[in-house]
Image 1 (cartoon, rainbow, N blue to C red):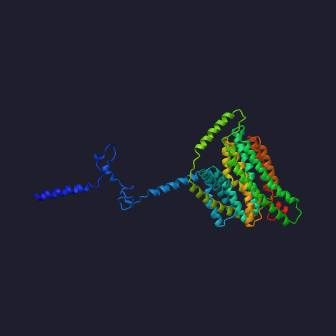
Image 2: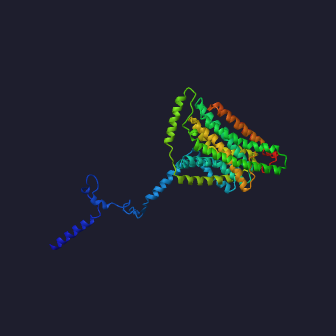
Image 3: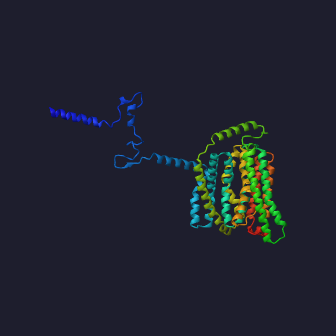
Length: 472
């Protein structure tokens, strides 16, 4: 009997000890919530063992428990997805590694040029995207300065690479081509495609006239050196020194004017550049069009949220800038062989091909907003970008050439100076009334096509007759 009682007591003690680690019974839940008496039983960290460490799945393998690591992977994946889907031209990113490999392996010069040419297009779009994201983080004033600095970063990087190699002809043609591409090709496409949807589009004449006046000043800065050179009778070395001195002094003045323009645009007269303060429409359906445009602007402002943080935007800017510099290095390095094998002049490559690549993202943006009847924004992208090239990038390259000992000047060949002057003159005539239509766009596209054809048949040797050192 004693042995029987002893056996029952041991069985009962085993049952009580086995139930100590079990979850609380349903009777411990009061009002649908866990009882406070059992709160100390909850695990401190997620995971079946309550300590955040890996647990076994029953077959000897360990299941990793890393919620922080998984969250980081998901975050990086989401940001990469946002960056890659920011523009449809990013499908060309496949040419970035191909272009670099072609340059490293020293493939055919045509393959190197074409692959790096195509690689720079999506890199320019990513550079523009990261700049806009960073501008949203730092505010309007500093954001405007960042857009001014990085808006033409591709042309600037390509020109710096060419300048260090002594390719003055490529640098000058690229600068002039960027200006012509924006005020003729981009603005013409904005007027043309926007005019196909709207019979007449209006924009802020004050802003347009201010930009066109500054472009006229920039045009004068190129005409004056050419006029001075044509009147000099000194030996060519002395003539070139005088042209360099004039160019460097003029570049300092142009940089000061650009800084003043930034203050004018972002500070003292910012109200003139407010895209929502539209001038009155003169067409019959102007009221409806202005109302629709206001609705579009409101919806655009509501969704104007940064998709990347400041640190992420800077990382993208640095990485893309390095890739652009590498692709530009191989692109510029293959130009001489391309010229020798194909017969295409350096002037045509620098004036037509490179600007189209560097401004591809801006081209698409300007045309899209013009088709949405946001002509002030389209004008700002097209003419504003040209003004940055004329008043900021070109003078900066002259000063940089001065520092590194390269004879970069504001003296352009006579034919190029005349083309530049005529282009700015035509553009000023077309925008001075504050209205546009598809016919005006066709005019600009037509004159750009004529200029492209003329530079295609224009040999590099024609410029050597001017006899300016450093300008082959």
